[in-house]
Image 1 (cartoon, rainbow, N blue to C red):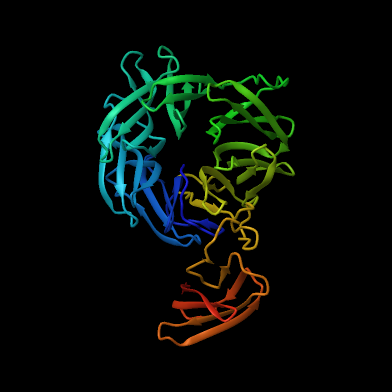
Image 2: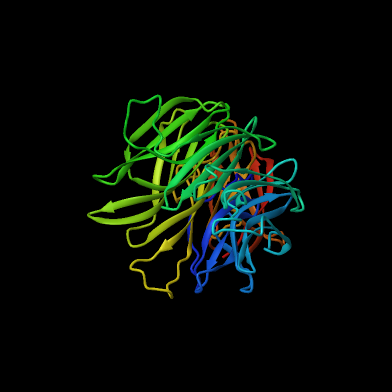
Length: 483
């Protein structure tokens, strides 16, 4: 659940069709593309660790399943110092243990380490999130409480080699039969915001926002089950989904209200100050029903809501991946759902991307269910800055970009060239050469900031690109033709 820094400039809808089931529980954007981790289901109700790499255009580069002698589940991944740190759990001697691995861009594991208490209940030792800090890696998990004999939410600090430094627990009621898990960690000015999900023996959920300092000491918490807003007159039930800190030190909580007559709902945003006091309430017009959600806020305080929507077409209910974007005042910028009515899709992960789009990870749910032999495959949706699956190269380039951009690169049919800050009455000449230095194409344009070059007839390979502005050399680079 973490932002990348590379400039992706792409949109795609990718189905990972394999003869085995798989689910993408987390995604990280990297210079090479998108590194995905999750689980591959097994017939015995257990699973194997799953990793996959897509390039920036959604082309499959490789996927990997950990050998079947290891029962594993990967839930979170970050990139740090040119490596990926994958966290989840592994079954050892019929007990689940927290797991962290150091992995390179090709999926080669440098080392793996187990941590967490060896006394476990069903919900213990289940990593849900990982971030890096000055000490190493901070892990959101759960652990066995020897006093209450139940499961407490657990925050674990590891060093950069995966060794334990300290751990803190955050129980909700140590004498009630509950399973408490930390779902999310996000940095704040004082320390961190945690999201805790407590589940009792009747499968009822009790979500909390917890604010802690950088040493893990709790500052305050809010129980958000059936939360009653203080800045709204509404007395309808609302349901907490997720939260994220903004750049002003507040925490924005995302809630949902369902209309049981039509299964539609409202986006609801409640703002809490740094001390946990409610300061504002906003409710959107009615939209499609919203199920699972991941929420993010960028540096401009724009809000991304990424998840799963429940839809209805003439009495036929189905599920689709979706994403919404709002400005800092909670006004809707765009909202889309992805897929078709013939195939249900369940959301597992999603992040904003560095080109101001989003990528969503889900799994198809083919209906009707055909039993143990049915395969469910990953679905990855990457959008442009407008939430579209077709990249808009005119509107989706940052106005702050000062460099010449060539995308997609590598390309298969065409590539785009974005040229910032061109003077008026600009004459552009573009020449393309093969590795032997032979000119294979040339073009001429007037006053064009963004140019599309058709290259489907080029042979696969590397080409030199030269751009002249008003007869003076302006830019030299390379493009790669594939496919």
